[in-house]
Amino acid sequence: MKNFFYLLVCVSLFTFTSCNDDDDDPELTESNIEGAWNLEAYENDYTLNIVGLGTTAGKAEITNSDVIVTFSSADLTWTSSGDFTLEVTDADSTTTENLTGGIGSGTYSVENGNLLMVGIDAGDETDNDEPTSFRPTSYNPDSRFEGQADLDVTITEPFLGLTVSIDGDVIMELSR
Image (cartoon, rainbow, N blue to C red; front, side, top):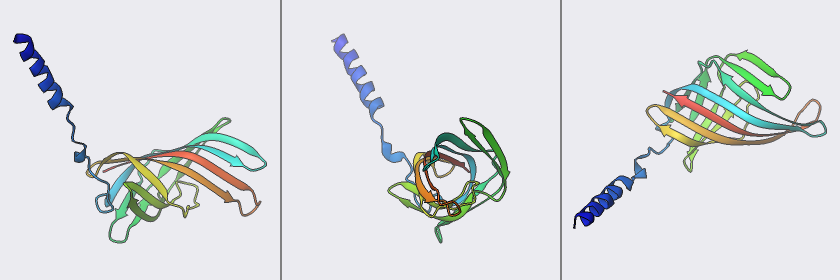
């Protein structure tokens, strides 16, 4: 009888501690991302292919950021302001540049739980009209957004006519 009691206690403990209600996770919406966020991190591990010239891999990372990203649910726009350092590293070198004026501005939406942002330039001054879709990896509407995006862009450079493809994994972290 004593063993039965211990078995019952163990099963009860396992039952109560193993039940986890995932419905408590906050859902990302266009209205609860609204407001000002500090850009804590933005990095892109990329592969760059220039047709006819070859392929290189590297990492672009924003450091020393005091960038503020502000989302407005009234018109679904986002803006940014502030300074940051852009550090680009490839197999041969590291280039560092201090930039001002934020990481761009544009429109945003939330679709299928992902944050879609149009207009991110992150230092290269060429806004991409295609949305960058960030899958939340961690989200609390009061304090933190961490997201990942897959970047797959092909453009034709207008002056030399070169076709350039970029394939990358982007991580963005925002905090309030």
